[in-house]
Structures are given as C-alpha cells and as structure tokens.
Length: 123
Figure 1: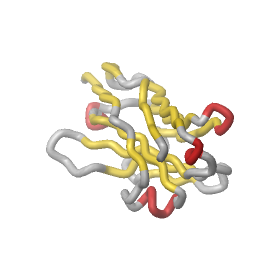
Figure 2: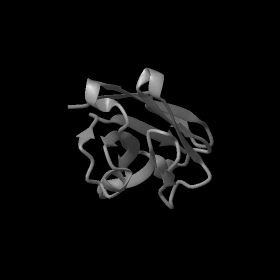
Figure 3: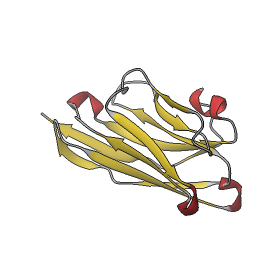
Figure 4: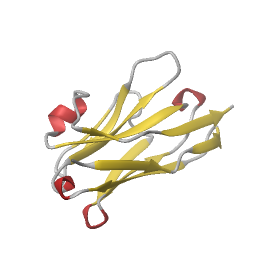
C-alpha cells in the first residue's frame, strides 16, 4: 500500500504561483505513476496532471495546459505540481494519486489517493 501526503496549498492572489508537493511512503511506491486531481465546490473531480516513474510520459488536463508543470524526485518519493498564473477558477482541493499504470491514473482509477490540500485563489 502506498501512503500519500500532500502539502503546499494555501491562499494566493490571482496571478500568483504555488508549488504543491506529495510525499509517498511505503515500499510499493517504487515505479508508480503519480499525478494530481482537483475538485472544486459543486464539481466533479478533474484530472490535472500525471507523470510516469521514468518521466517518459507526462499528461496534462486541457484546463491547465501551459500554466501547470508536474515533476517528480524518485529519490525523495515525491511528486510536485508547479502552478503559475493562478486564476480564481483554480480554487479547489488538490489530490495526489498513484497507480502502477499511468493510464489507470489518468482515468481516475488510481490505486492510492492522498487526503487533499486546499488551494484558494482570491481575485
């Protein structure tokens, strides 16, 4: 079992930047694809970004392309999400996810989920 803990959320004004982190623990975290989803009030959970263990495959949701960057540090078992040019519509709870298959992760069928971290963007 993989345990995931997100951090880095907070209150940011529009146009600002934020970096989220997700630390994975447990021996099964090795070679897992990892990524991010978000859920805004009254909306369904939305795919944000995903990255394979080797960095060979990276995907972004259509709504965040050009502003969000996903990366990972396998030595630290950590995935990051750099968010630039924040907009009020980015306000949501951001969830980290992990799965042996990046296709499964992107399809919201991840094996493991974090507890979420709140991102609030003021206008």
